[in-house]
Amino acid sequence: MKLSQALLAEYTQEAATTRSLLALVPLDQNDFKPHEKSMTLKQLYGHIADIAGWWEQCLVQDELDFAKTNFASKDFEDTAALLAYFDQNVVATTKILNEIDESEFAKNWTMRSGEQIFNVFPKAVVARSWCLNHWYHHRGQLSVYLRLLNVPLPPIYGPTADTAGI
Image 1 (cartoon, rainbow, N blue to C red):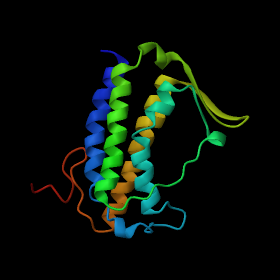
Image 2: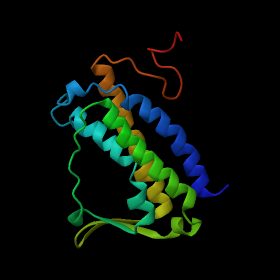
Image 3: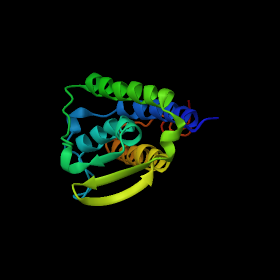
């Protein structure tokens, strides 16, 4: 199996799980954060929806330069708008993973801010660490935020305390 197809299979499964969590976000609690050092709920769910579309920057392009990029938080008027944005990113990523030449995974990718280089990794490593593991990390945070807001959690990797009886 090609790496792109293995990543796509995982991405597709995880996107469905992520979408089920995003669908439950109480947008009226945008300013909620469990600790003073934590992101707000709005920052967190926006970041998760953004990461779903990072594959363009991480596989098609050869670098991400923060000095040339504006990462402003998006405003979503309702859950439908949040999910539409997320779905748009999923469609774009699916297209990339279906069309990418396997040789791209061996090429180096650079994260920088102007002249300051933070890291250089093969794109295969970036796909796993920045596009997937990073996404799962923040999705886990979102599940904690939702629990603290008394939002029943859907199955993630099996039943949750809220779905065990289903």
